Image 1: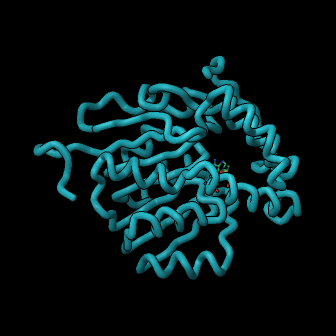
Image 2: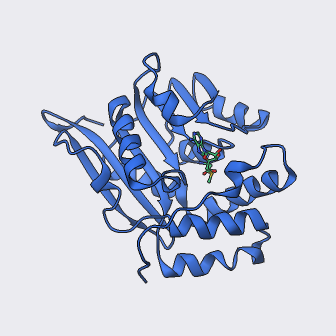
Length: 238
Ligand SMILES: C[S@@+](CC[C@H](N)C(=O)[O-])C[C@H]1O[C@@H](n2cnc3c(N)ncnc32)[C@H](O)[C@@H]1O
């Protein structure tokens, strides 16, 4: 079921202080929604389809509580040397931090705006950039800039976003049944309306033959973009 063009509205979670009870509840809702959507699975399968080699350095944009990245590491078995998590409001608990450290040699959790961080000259390039439920925050022109910054810093990129469909939109109305609060129900509906269909993200990726790019709906509710830099041989060996 197709929906009209993307519509953007501010999300409540982005505006609330991290310590607000309704924000804390909504972060818990997000963990359940990510599990229901199967987003760690879709990110892993996107990386697998692109034959992304096990990354030594991973940067997660808008990492929130870090649990989604943890699930991706558990699923892929990746053991990077360095993990960098960026969010304007990083809310990674000590417990999640310890679990992430079991999957890597060095963990950095940074409070920053992703544009500022990616634009800075002194931030390192990485093997893989990941993000989950973040790209839909931006209108196409801003998104084109963001994807350009990502392509300049990474060998590969995987993103999981809401599929913009009537079915997904209808499903957000049922989130109260699994205990999601008003913030989550509001943000989920907005996120679907700002989500993606078809090749809407790939069309905003830098026009560069050096990249292999894939994009499609995954499962019932998710929509993934994957991009990997090609080498002379096609793509780097796994
Ligand atoms: C819908 S939540 C997703 C969080 C996490 N990726 C997940 O799946 O649980 C969106 C996240 O984007 C962060 N965010 C929004 N705008 C940002 C920006 N410009 N720079 C960094 N983080 C941002 C918010 O703080 C929030 O944690």
